[in-house]
Length: 348
Image (cartoon, rainbow, N blue to C red; front, side, top):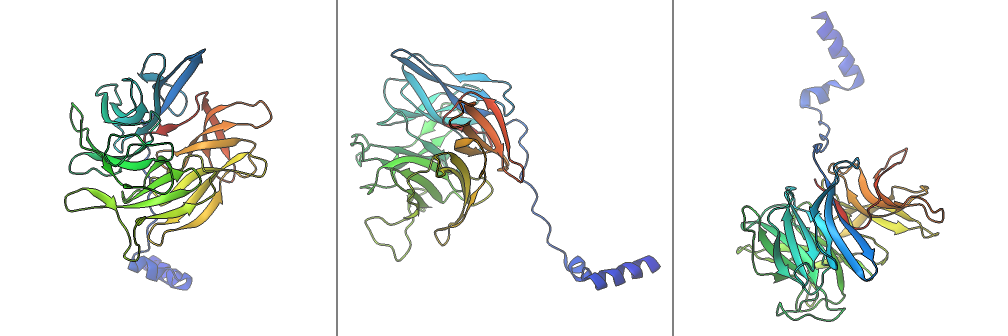
C-alpha cells in the first residue's frame, strides 16, 4: 500500500497519472516486416542489332537471383510492378509481336496478356484493394477513344482495366479510359495509386499530376471532380512542374512519395514529398540524401517504407553503377545489391 501511495504521489508530481488513468496514446506499431519479399527487375542485353529484356527475381541481399520470364531476341519485358498481394507481376511487353500489358504469377505460371497497347513500354499500377471483379490496373497508352486506334506521340491517355487473378485462366474486362476524350498533356507514365485507392499519380513530359478517381454504383471508375470544377479537365491537380522527376513512387503507409531530383551539379538526390490529398497540395519536401556522393534515381520503397530501392552511381568518378538499398537517417546507408538498373519493384 505504501508503494502504491508513493507511486501515486510521484505520478501526480510529474503530471503523469491523468494520462495513465485516461489511457495514454499508444505509439503506432511499425509496419509488418516482410520475410520473403523479392525484387522483380528487367534484365537486358544488347548484341549488335539484337536486344532482349527478361524478368528476374532477387532478394534484397542479392541472393536467390532467379529467372521469372525468359524470351527471345528483340522481345522487351519492361516496367514490372507487383500486385498488392505479392502474387502477380504486371509488365509491358511486345512478346507476341504487338504491344500489350501482361501479368505473370510469381511462380512463372498464368502468363496472360490482359490488354493490347500501342506501346511496349506502358507503365502500370495496381489499385491496392480488390474490386468485385479482381483488381483495377491503371496504365498509360496512346490508344484513342475508340479503344483501338493508336494516336500520335502526344496523344497518350490514362486507362484502367479490371483483372481477375483469383484463378486461372486470368480474366480481364474491357479497358476504360479515365482521361478521354482528351487530356491536354501527354501522360508519359502511370506512377501508381495512393494507399486509399482514390488517387493516381501521373507523370507528363513537363509536370506531375494527381488524378482523383471515384467509382460509381456499377463499380466503374471515373474522374472525381470537385463541385467547383468545370470541364474540360476536372478531377486532377498539379503536384509539381519541375519536369525533372524520375519515377514518383507512393509509400505504402503514408500519403507521400519518394522521388529523385538533380542538384546544381546534376547529381540526383532522393526526396520525400508528403501530400495533403484532401486539400490537394504538397506539405513538405525533404532531401533524404543531401551530401551523398551517389547519384540516385528510380526509387521504390521497401516493404516497410523504411528503405529505398534505387539505381546508384558516383558521377565523374567511374564509380560503381547498379542497384542499391538506401536507408535514410543521421548516417546514410547505401548498400549495393546488384548491377541491374532501371525500373524495378519490391514486393510488399
